[in-house]
Length: 431
Image 1 (cartoon, rainbow, N blue to C red):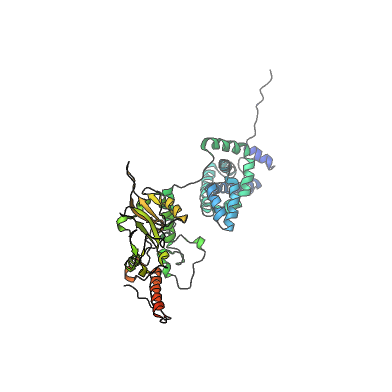
Image 2: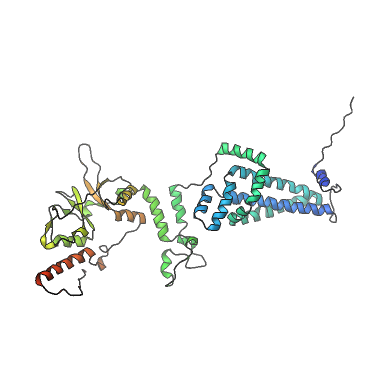
């Protein structure tokens, strides 16, 4: 019978001694070269494990969408760094497996070397302290603050590690892609994006060292002659936040939220005449476009552009329903029409005013219930009232159209009398 020969498989420590061509011992003293070799390897493992831990936080905190935003809209340096990181982040799960595998290998190998230079209790204490402080806390704190910079600098190292661990990381990465999916882009819902924009406003950065960086309501406090610079580095001011939030909210708004009811609309009958009383009422309304109705106010047949009336003399009392007055067509929109559709309609240039109609019952025709103008839509977008000359009652001034009409009247009188027209024309302002 063949005698049983025991099979001796060398452990890690025998392999370590053979690799460095040193004598194998259970423990090495302070004055022996293997002691310092173990110390150097331990420091390397802690540093390498800390780097992997930090890169896990730095690289995996970016998704392809955020990196693409930096590439397209960031500074030149940010764009260059984001392009480097995008090379490895595209393979999200393979990158994750590579970093975790390398970190685990380094942390598991560390006690093996510490055990050769100290007692088991000291080795455990050193291992836990080194891993916690230098392998987790410090690297992750640094990478969370300077993730883009550190991640871009370490991309070549990561690519090499991904190639080395490819037999395992590629297989596990493909498995995770199959189970969890490839896409990890952070897309915000409309409500979430609206709240996110609010946190980029001026109130968030009030404590900045430069008092001129926080604009918002404090813009008037900036000294005269100073123009804010580096706008990309400042928080959004109050108007920017309001407009962006208004643009997001307007997607859920309809004509019903912005239109002016018919009883508040200044209108003229088609049977009227453009005499002095009518012109004065148009001036007082402050409108640049006036709807025209036939019979009842709910039967809007068109509108007139006020500036087109300048060539007409009020003394002629031109009928509205005449060849001298052009009635423009006013589009009709329902109450439930989205405001963005109205904005697109106004952008075509066909009209800056539309007639709002009610929902017609079966067997009946829809009637006008109000109007909506481009100004109404812009006010919803800005979430602020747009005050014009006619809205400022204590300081109401004569409109350009009214000034032209008065000048036309004076010029007509001068022509008939043969008098010389004064160089300076003083037009009284209505109080």
